[in-house]
Length: 90
Picture 1 (cartoon, helix red, strand yellow):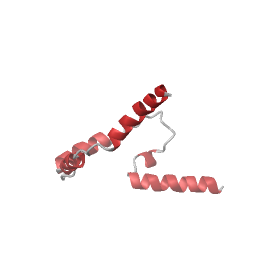
Picture 2: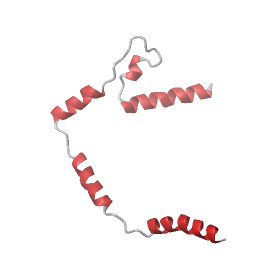
Picture 3: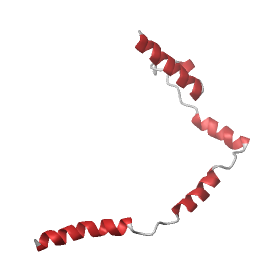
Picture 4: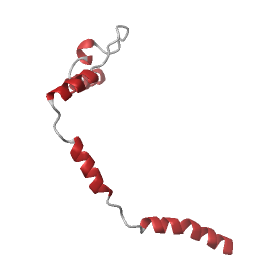
């Protein structure tokens, strides 16, 4: 009986101490980091980002047509949704 009580105390005590611990001021540091990330990019930086974001198309890759692969994200998503809806309708 005494062993069960000790084991229960050892399990419950860390949970209680964790739940009652004082909260850190982490959100303030996260907002400072996100504010730095929200700064506007210069045209040179955007050009570098766009150059890195372009996929390398492989001539052996035939599962995605080039017009879909090279389309912007919103257009590609819309065409994929249309294709999925027509495939399920038939």
